[in-house]
Every structure is written in structure tokens, then in C-alpha cells.
Image (tube, rainbow, N blue to C red):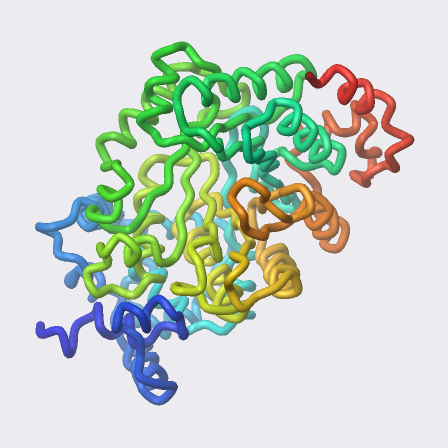
Length: 451
């Protein structure tokens, strides 16, 4: 089939407006062309996505992964649907949590991307809220009624005192049940080893049921595991094409090796999900590795990579790459809802770094809106950054008190094992509510001996 009538072109023209797609030359020329493409997409059979690849099978190992691991039996209940009929089914009462969980292995990322392009914001929230994905390592995340946070104590010089101060501050707010994760300012194995020991000492000394992660390249993590470092989760940024992943210095074989290495340490206590992946719309385009595919469809293809390795956490860093890809708050909000819905539909423990760079046309009100919508949609976790301002990565995210706000508003609680620890430490009461600072004697003792 020629490019004019290709599935690749149809998906791109049906996409919601994104500055990255305009930059790539794949976007619809205007609303009329976009709506016509959405109408055509609505009438497209889901089976077409199994017959036509947006990135050639012969050229791309991600495509081969998608096609070769497709579960035809799981797909059978929706195999007769068009994309539009699939949307209607997802919004019906028949699409409950068990049905969606059973369906996930039968869906390709392109199917998820396609149906999301026909959905308005409330559809993305409602459908995602019905998906339940539970993972575990030292605590259990993703359970109904629960909402977790990654405590992100980054420091511009990796100063141990600064990192510990931010970490303890976050713990006082009930943050950190998803992971305590540091983006190192200096990405050497020696420095990463020092940071891992710092976090491991804090977690071990105070018997905190959570996991740590230093977000270094997977090859560094493999070296650290060989050095017997206290590695809990193995991190890597991933993308939706083989060429884009190569620009990150990875391939599927390397990810498999790293997962096996992390599993060999047997550091989990309640589960063995050991991988932590981060993604973001626009990453393939920024590496000139997009194959003419729109950025949201490529983001979903990254989820196929993540799904294969049974991760503990997947995080869409939704506004981090910049306005070249998501121009303003409206585009960031839409992308965040799309990413979360598609990831959950594909069976992933989706979180979001609700964020923007300082040169984007966005502000903290936009982030409040997306935070609240994702909370209603059942987002697994968000970031907890001191003051919402990451002084090392130089971008704006969500703060410890933002997560506390969402838990209070939506009556969500932390992971159960972590919640029990918060109550034991006097940080939460038995009802899951944060206690005033003066009512936290054991937590204050932790602060005194934290270093």
C-alpha cells in the first residue's frame, strides 16, 4: 500500500495537535483534515494493525517484538471490532477490570494509540480508571484505592547531606512508596555506587518498605551489579523504534541481560518486578529515528518494549523534552492523558512525571489540572520533588504536597506496606492522614540519625 493510504499516515493525521508532529511534517494540515482522518480511523478494523506495520518488520526489532509476541487468543474478544467500535466497548460496562486485564496481551501498541486518537479527555480518564495493574518489589503498587509517589531527591552536586535532607522531607509527607530515585549529576559508576549505598543505608536502618534506584545507564547498572552494589531496580530510558533505542545505547538483548542480573540479586521481599522504564513523546523524533510515524504512536510502541520485561514502574516524563514536541499546557495535558491510558490499557504500571521545561508555554496550574485528571484516571504514581522545582535537572514537576493533596482529595492511600510503616513512624494516623510535624517523634528521630 502506498504512503498516501497507509496506516502510518492515517494515524499521524488523526492525532491531536502536537508541535513535534508539525516539526516532523506528519501532522494534519488543520482541523478538517484531522477530523476526516479520525472518521476513517474509526472505520478501520483492528485486524489491520496485525497485517500492516507502521515501521517495517524486517528493519526494526521493536516491530518484530510486537508482532511475534502478540497473543491471538487474548485478542479474540475484540477481533471483530473497528477502532470506533473498540472505543465504544472500552467505555461500556462490559469493559471492567478483569476483562481489560485479560485483553491487554492481545493489543498492539498501535491499536491502543489508534483508539486514544478517537477519545476526548473524559474518555481517556474513564477508560484508564478501569484498568488495574499491580506490581511489587518491597511494597505493592497499583492496588485499587492506592496512589504512590517516586521521591526524587536530586542535587546539583550529588551532595549526600542535601540528598538526605530532601529524602527525609519527602518521607515526612508520605512520599517514596513507588521508589526513592536519584538522577545523578555525575554519571560514573563510582558516584552511582556511593549514592546506592547512601539510600540503602537509610532504607535498611529505618526498615522502610520501599526500593531505591539511581537512574544511570543500564550498562552502568550491570557494572554495579557485578561489583555487588545494592541495586534494587534497574533503570533505563526506552523508545519505540530500534533506531531510537540504539541512540540510547541499548537494544532488547541488553535489557534482557540487565533484568536477569537484577533478578539474580533477589532483593525484593514481596515481589520480583525489577525494571523501571522512562519514556516521553518526541524521543524518537529527537534522534531522527521516527520513520515518519507520529510521536504518540511511537510512545505507545515504547510501552511494548516495557511490557515485555514485566516492569515494576513505567514513567512517562510527559513535558520534559520541551516545547519543540509539546508546545503548551494544553498539549502536555493531552499527551499525559494519552500516555497514561495507552500504557494502562497495554497492562503497564503507568506513572507520570507531570512536568514542563521553563521555556514551554505552561505553568503550575496546567500541572495541577493534569495531576487531578490523572489521579481520577487511576495513575499509579507521580513525582515528589522538593518544591516542585528540580534544581539539578532544571525543570518543574510535582511536589510532595501535591501528592498529599491528591491523596486527600480522592481518598487514596499509599502502598499498604509503606502505609503501615508511615503509621508506625507517626507520620500518618490510622486513617491514612498526615500528622502535624510536632506529632512525629519517631520520624524526627529518623531525621536526626539520617546521615
